[in-house]
Length: 346
Image (cartoon, rainbow, N blue to C red; front, side, top):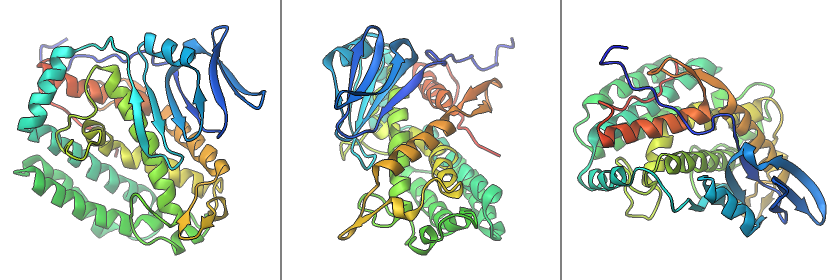
């Protein structure tokens, strides 16, 4: 191997699964070496604990202290989400690796790390452009061309505010054309009710689904950051001033379009979810239990799909790729990697 070749990165237990608990009123517990999920004495699921490498708890679901202790003892993370998908908290083992790198992370977060921030945004915009180019049913030549220009310009952007400006310009073009990514067989009400991109408090069905999928992606990103011993709250693009997991928000940017958006579009375009699955109550649009399970399953299928990592050249699942990217950030912080390279789809 040449001396300038990138150091190969391995991730923990690549064959395990992240278990999502989505049924309201259910309880997950540890029994005879298995994670057992029950509701009103009915067994809903049972999997060997050796297969579980992380736990995501959605809404009103109970988890036994024995199961929490076992997962933490094994070094795995637990993430709690609201029923809307918003991440509300997480737990990690007290025995966390790379303590010195975490100190360096906080120093770099305070002083700024423009190179990392540039790559997070550049990869995000590039992947949004690819999503439009591949799947739009209308002519998107001009916005895709402009988004490619923005992605390239990120490498020389002078500061973080300018990066946010470029990201905002690209996002406006991407989400203006987002309904063109829906198939002719999809429920037309998704496009008819689309007001443009809105985050928390969204009242249209498509934004509600996107927000939930972004919550799933954030949970996976928090878990990946925990796995390599970094702090999800000390970021380089986003700041921790609003008590949000800034590094997790940084790292998930390049995965929004190829993972979360793709999962939402897949579920809608395949007819798995229709607008009627998201009933409206007063001014709010609620994600029904069935739609929540369906979208979670679509997301799980997507993160299990494989790609060839652009730096290391081996085949990995999208979920493994998130942790590999987190470890690349770790490499930049501890000096074992020269630079961070985002994943750009083509």
